[in-house]
Every structure is written in C-alpha cells, then in structure tokens.
Amino acid sequence: MNNNVSIQVKYGLGDKMLDIIGCCVLTKYLNYKPHVTFRNDMQFAWGVNSYDMRLFEFNGVTLSDAKCDFFVDSPNPSSSLCPYKVYEFLSRFFPDLTFEQVSNEFVEASKQIIKPSELISSKIPKNIERAYGIHLRKTDKVTNWCDIRHENPIHEFNIIINNLLEDVHKIIVAEEEPAFLLVSEDTTWRQEIINIMLNISSKCNKPIQIIEVDYANEHNYCNYSSVLDMFCLSRCKEILQGVKYSTFSILASLLGSNKLRNYAHHTKSYEVCLIHSWSSVVDINNNKPNLDMELHKKVTASVTSINTNIVSVFR
Image (cartoon, rainbow, N blue to C red; front, side, top):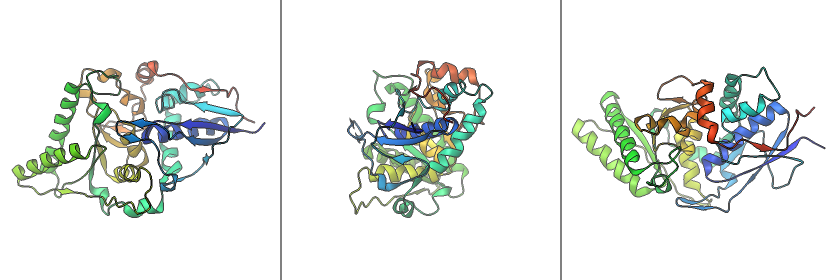
C-alpha cells in the first residue's frame, strides 16, 4: 500500500483552492502525497464551477481522477480544511504541534502550491502592486434567508458597502495617486460602485485610477476572467471585501500580501462569521494574525470536521 491520498475539490474557485492548500498542509505532516480531482459539474448563480487547469501552475500536487488507497474529504468546502480544523486533526498525531506552526505552514504552502500560468501572469496589469483591490460579490451572497456565518442579509450588505465606501473616500484623500482594481461576478454592480467612486473623486477634486484588465480570451478557456481576477487581486497591496465573507478574496490574499480589509465587524453577526477561521493566516484589518485558539474553536464548532481514512503517519 502506497502513501497516495486523493481529494475531490468542489464549489467555487476559492473553496477548491483553499481545500488544496489545507490538504497539502495536512498530508505534508502525515507524509502522504495528495492527488486532486476537480468536480466541475455544478451550476451556481454566478456561473459554472469549471476552471481550465491550463491557467494554473501547481507544485507539490498531482492532478488525477484516479482513486487512491487513502482519501481526504472536506464536507464543508474550505471550512473543513481551514487552519484550525487541520490543526485539530493533526494534534491527534502530534501532541506537541502548535496552532501557530500549522498556520505558518498554510502561509508558506499557499505561495508555493498555486501559481498563475505564463498566460495569466502576462495579462496582469503592470504596477498593480500599488493598487487597492476591491472584491465585490453579490448574486447568491445577499439574501434575507441566508446562513449568517458567510452570507449577507440585505441590511448587513448595505452596512458593509457603506463602510467600504467610507474607506475608499479616506484612501482617495490620503493617497497621492490613488489606484483601485475592482472585480466582481456582477458587472452591473461593479459599474455602480465605480460610478460612486468617481463621484467621490470629483467631490474631492482628486483624480483616481481605475485599473482595467484585458479579458480577451483568445483560447476560450473556461472561467478565464475569474482566474485572472483572482490573480490580479493577489498582486494588490491590500484587498477590500465588499461582502461579509468570500473564499475567493481570502485565497487571493493568501497568495499575495496576506492583507485583507473585512467589514463584518460592523454587523451583529460578526461573532459567528467564518472570516475568523482564516484570521491566523491573513492580516485582517491591520491586526496581526489571530492565534486565539478559543476563538477559532468557537467559530469552527459548527463546521463539519475532516473526513478521512488516514489513521496513522505514513512511515
């Protein structure tokens, strides 16, 4: 019996890639070799969840549909393989392992495992490192009948957007040459926010740069623009989340600056927001990585634990 282990990743880009990172951290400690299968047959309000693998470069994982002797399953995509859940599982095998060590491994692994293809790298605008990335998410994330851990009631969504725009105003006033990259699955909503920002710029008598991305998809790659958006976000100096919780921009932050501005703390449901589950690996709101294990344990208590047939370290 060999030490190959399979994982099937599903849902959207952020969920899939965060599960790959979590699986790689887990299997590195346990000495298994991860084989990744992508489930691409799901339809969401924002589109299909199929991403052309030619848009990525993966290191340390094998892309394969073959079944292995061992498996890892993430019942709640991304959340079941978040840093604390991985630490919780690994502590059975390594009693002296610390949450900080596992969190540091996530940070290091994320920047090694998932990289853009040459094509994607060539399409990332120059000087994007000086821009603030704004991730706008609407569609299925905003409804009054929602899971408040990661979705927005309409009144909370309005609070988040208002606070984001307040920060945009402050950035425009403070920066010498303010620049912004806005990405969204909803092009109409993106343009609405751009118009508001241009109005703020006009009132402040301060020009701003809205970075535009060339989405020409000559090869007709599936979900090309989404992948390009994610890697563009990852190059920005900081990411502002225009929604309570999004694995898409958490992933971009992990692959890039590890700096994220999140506005869930302005809402009543902040204590249960899953944004906390990534606060040990991402600098959220200019706070140092949060290693408060009681907080992480509490927030992830409602998250289903990792499902696997791994019962020992492979020797």
